[in-house]
Length: 406
Image (tube, rainbow, N blue to C red; front, side):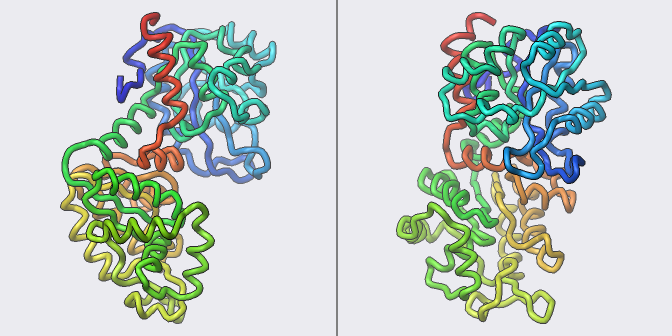
C-alpha cells in the first residue's frame, strides 16, 4: 500500500486475466506517433504482468481534435517496446472482442479500441453510475483484476477509470505508484523545499503556490515565465502593454485581489525575477524589469539565472513546473535550461509534466532528476493538494469491498 492505495504487491496476479488502463495519449501527425515517452513509462508494469492474460484500455486525444484516432499505431509501439506482440482490435466490447478475450492465453496482450470513441466514457457520472455503463458491464466479468496505471488521467472521472473499482478488485500499477510516491515526498517529505513555478498557465501555478505557501510546505516559491510577469504586475512593476495582454489572456479563474493578498502575506518567501530577456535586433538582450520598454519578455535574465543557480541546489527538495521562458526559441533557452540544471543538483528533484519535462529531455537532464512526471493536469492537482478521483475511488472500494477478498 502507498498513501492508502493498493498496489500490485497487494494481490496475486500470476496467470490471472487482467484489465489495465494506460495513458499512451501522445502527439501524432498523419498517424505517426512523435513521442513514445508515455509508452516507455508503462513498460515496467507491463513487463511485470507478462505472465498474465492482459487486456489494455487507453485513449488518444478527444473528439474534435485532428489526432483523435484509433490505437492501431499505439499497439505497434507497445509491441516494439515489449518485444512481443500486442494485438490490436478495432472495437471495445462487441461479441467478437469478448470472444477474443475469453481465448487469451498467458503472455498474450490485447489492446482494445480508443475508449473515447464511446460517448459513455466521458459522461459526468459517479463511479456507481459508470459501473452500470455498457462498456463496464460488458467487460468486467471477464477479468480477475483491474489495474490503473494511467496517472496522467487520474483527475478525470471517466468510465474506464472509475467504473471498474465498484465491480472488480482494483489496484494501481507501477507508474502510478512511482508518481504518487515521488509527489508525496515533494509535499510531505522532510527538509527544506523550494517550488519553481513558471510557464503560461497562471491558474495552475497559483493552485500549487497557494497550497505550498499556506500549508507551510515550501520555504520558497520561485516564479518565472508568464506566472512571474503576472506577479510582477501585482507588485506594481510596469511590464508593458504586450506582456500585460499575454498575462490577461493566460489567466481565467484567478482573483487578482486574492493573489495580491497572497503576495503581500508571503512576500519574503516569494522570489520574482530581478531582470528579464527581450529581443532587440533579432538577438537576446538582458534588461532590468523597468527597462522592458514595451518589448515582449522572452525569458528570465542572466542576473536572475545566476541568483537561482546559487540558491536552488541548497534545498533538500526542489520541484519545478513550467518553463522560465520561450525555450522553443534557441535564443531564449538559457533560463529554462540553467534552472533545470540547478534543480538537478538539489537533494531530491521533481520535474512536472508537459513543456518542462520536454525541456528536460531536450538537454538530457531528465536522467539526472529523481522524478520526471508523465502528467500535466494530474500532477498539478496533486501538488495543489487536490484529490485525484480515479485514485480515491480505488481506495474507497478496496477498503469497502475488496481488501478481504483478494
